[in-house]
Image (cartoon, rainbow, N blue to C red; front, side):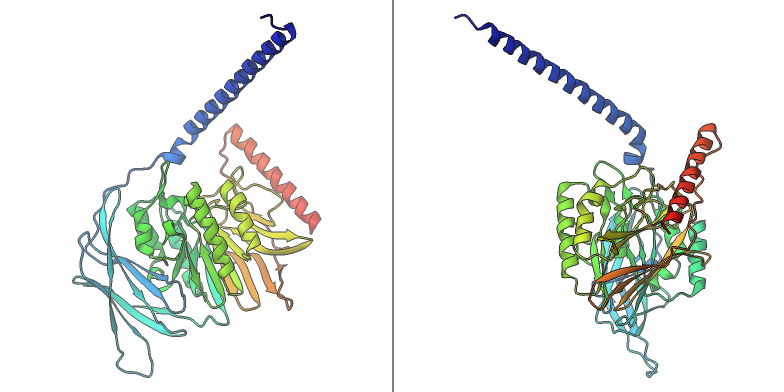
Length: 479
């Protein structure tokens, strides 16, 4: 059989194209492998390397007493503590303060124990649930383990039907503890009125016992008298291909078991008469199952909330403020859920700089409002994407938030008391929410200077300062 010459040429051309495509594919694949290998080499320590934890002995004394809310903030508190490396019968003794009674009736609640084995030590943690608490009352308690009894501590169950106040603090992450000691001391001296504190992750430098000691030393008596609403940051995780949360984190907090099925106690929500706060452990949102569970849970939890305000908190920013950083999962998979299901305020950390972003739609400025803040002695260089309404760098900040039926007031402060950001989300008569930005005339501060004195460092500094000037010029034109 004689083949047509045209068919032969076509077959040869097809063969050449296949070889060419295979060659190009091989080159592209080789480039990708080389690039990934270089990135892996550069980022290996950041992604996978863990500093060995120093061996520690758990003392036979009550320590790390922590007060957290249950799912119903008005009725429920959980008291947790650590004691010894051997299990003991433990209790919480408490009573309601009543000025009309001379002799007060105490209740004794058995505690649940949990054995926690970490990389360098072992301890028993205990917690007891206090339920059926009454709005507007004060309670005093002490914890008992074996023959050791703590001092008495007091906490309030506030009236929050009309007004709710809380503090939000970004990353604290203080390797030495000196700065966080000072910052928390300043807050205590201010005698601020608030009902709880929300921490947006990276409470500590590394998941090691010595850093937890620094954390509790800095918080002092607040840990056991002010309810803490915390989310885990990446610095509370042991690094690896499949990161694991430090066992101490869950044992010390004992948050509500109302989160996604496989992440209870890490992601959760707390209900108030005026607000639902939804806390998401964004560290685990890296595998499909975790993404799907959290996305569905967030959507349902936002939709089911009947309160006028919905606040969401997680560690990794939807819109990062640190230059060159982006969390793809939070940006493209969770941002639509927040926008479409009525989130009002989104509290974040991780980037060690300041950012506030409002949502723009059809010429209006509406919720959600996205905030990234930090109170750490570590500072990162910020970017200048126009999506940010307000920026700052080289700053330690805390945020005061007040919620009423009609308004959510958000204010950010330097620890010396200087007002840094100020806005209000209002519910109008038509039920729609709008934003009043009161910070347009407040100065922005850019103090980041981690460039070094080398020629390269000086060039980076000059480039950064030029970006600051361009940002300020653009803001002045817009205002």
